[in-house]
Image (tube, rainbow, N blue to C red):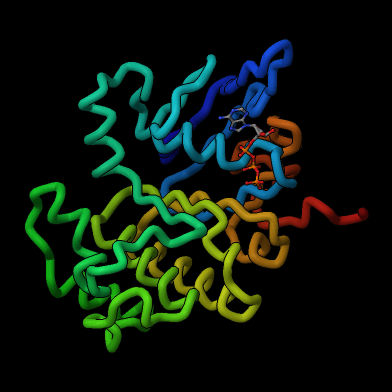
Length: 243
Ligand SMILES: Nc1ncnc2c1ncn2[C@@H]1O[C@H](COP(=O)(O)OP(=O)(O)OP(=O)(O)O)[C@@H](O)[C@H]1O
């Protein structure tokens, strides 16, 4: 597909636990277009985090392939994979992962500094304003609400200008209203800066805000994982409809 940015092919991740094999992912074929905002929804233990970790190069599949921008992750050497993780993807986690003794601004620019790149200050200011935390730039994370901390984590992910943002239950620790705010702001930021978002949630309302919903069950995608497919939805559909 022309504007495809992520493709997984027969992706499997098995864990051996004594006599048993846990099939965390069992043959996932997923295709994501550039600038798409997709929500991966599924029950606890269905394989959502495993999928995100494999796409982000944080973990290695048992078999199958992940392609990002046409490049096979399994062909990358250790060092190349580290550069891929730093430059190509931004991670947003449920527990924010902010550095407690750095202020908001310092947290946001930290990955850029660690990568030895120049900080685009007007761009960082624009992001902080868009995410409505510009007035908190001097604050330490401990002084902020959960929703504000998550917006800092999103700002940090966006600021390094990655092509893809991988968000693992970013609204999981937030109340409904803050969760919706954070999701809305993530969506606006990603559109503005032309980033692709793959977001995990088990909240159907949150998922409805995505361009497309991919439903995962027992390590497999239910329906097809292609943007043109109308089962998993060219448009956001409710995978639980008719339940
Ligand atoms: N390191 C591991 N060792 C063994 N089993 C694992 C490991 N990591 C994950 N699993 C198993 O793989 C399956 C999928 O886990 P995963 O974390 O991807 O699910 P999830 O959909 O993200 O769940 P949740 O919504 O609860 O975070 C689960 O059965 C889990 O117990």
